[in-house]
Figure 1: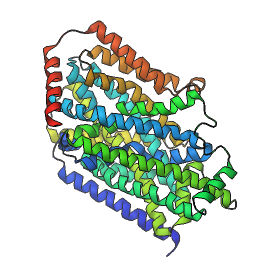
Figure 2: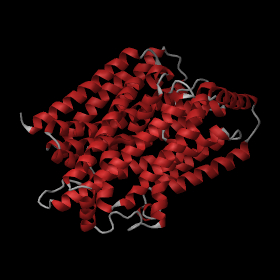
Figure 3: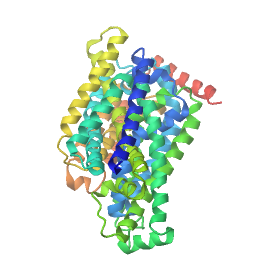
Figure 4: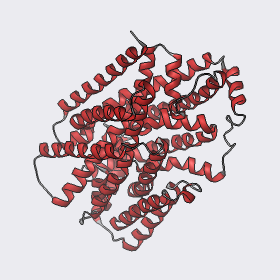
Length: 495
C-alpha cells in the first residue's frame, strides 16, 4: 500500500467513528432539551474534554503553532491568557451557571437564561442575544471550514475546495441528526485524539532533531530571539494576548457545557480534567512549533508548505504513514469539534431564542427538533459560502469572533451570576455596546494593531451594563427569590 492509502485508512476510520457517534446521539434524542443540552446528563470527563475540544478548534493545532513558528514564544502569551481565563471560567462561572439556569425556568440556552433571569417580558434581550450569536458564529464556523480546506490541501494535495466540502458534509451529518449528545461525545473522542497527537509529535520530534540541547541550539541558530517571551513584543501586545482569557466568560459553545453537566459537585473534577488537558495540549502545541523551527533549520532542503501546517508536516515526516494518518485525524478532530458545537448553538439561537420569542409558538417538541436541524443546515450553508474564498488566516477569523462573544456576553454573564441589580435594559445595552465596539475596532487596522478589540469591548460593555442597570433598577421579588435559591442550592450541593 502507498503512504497515501495508509493515511486515508486512518482518516476514514476516524470519520466512520464520528458518524457512528452521530447515529448514537440521534437514537438518544427525544425532545428539544435533549437536542440542545443532552438532558443535563454529561459526566465530568465528557464535559471537560468536550468544552476543551470545542474551544480549541483548528487554532490549537494550526493557528497557534503557526504563530509561534513564525514569531517565537512572544506569541505564547495568548496561551497563557487562555489558560488563566479557562481556569477562572470553570471556577466562577461553571457551578453558578449550572444551578441558575435550572432554577430560572430550566433554561437551555444562554439567551433564554438571560431573559428568564432578568424577567424581560419584551423578549428584546433574547432576540438581540440570538442575533449576536448568529452574526459572530457565522464567522467562527467559517474559520473552521477554512481550516478544513487548508487541512486537506496540506495533507493530501487535494484542492482547498474539495477539503472544504468533505469536512462540511461530515460535520453537518452528525450534528444535524445527533444534536448535543453526538456533538459532546464526538468532542470527547476528538479531545483524546488531539491530546495524544500533541504529546507524541514534539516528544518524538525532539529525538529526531538530536535531543533537547541540540534542538535548542538549532532554534537559536535559526532565530536568536525565538525562545524569548518578550523579544519583539510590546506591553500593549502582551496585554492584548493575555486579554484572550476574557473571552471565555462569553463563549456560548463553551459555557453551554456548564449547563449540561450532571451535578454542581462534578464541576470541580471537570475543572481539574479540563485545565490539565488544556495545559498539556498548549505546551505540546508550543513544543511542536519550536521543534519545527529546529527541524527545518537542520534540513534546509525540506520545505514547509505553510507555517500553519507545521504540526501536519512534522507528523508526516516523522511517523509511519498510518500513524501520520492518525496525526491528521487529530487535526481534523480539532477542526470538526468546534464547527459542530458552533452549529448547534447557532441552531438553538435561531429556534429557541428567535423563532420561539417572535412567534410564541406551541408546536410539539419533535417539530422543534426538526426546526433545529433545519437551522443547522442553513447556518452551515451560509458559512460554507463565506469560506469558499480563502482570504484570511485562521487565527484572524477566530480572534474576531472570540472578541465579539467575549465583549458582548462575558460581562453580562458575570453580572447576571454575581450582581442582583443587573436589569434587562442594562444587559441589552451592555451587550449591544460590546458587539458594536468589537465590530468597529476589529475592522480598523490602526486600532487592532494598537490593542486587541476584546479589551475596549469588554470594558465598555461592563460600564454601560452597570450604568444602565443602576438607572433602571426596580426591586423584583421573583429575581430576589431565584438569586437566593441559587446561592442556597450552591451551598448545599457543593458540600
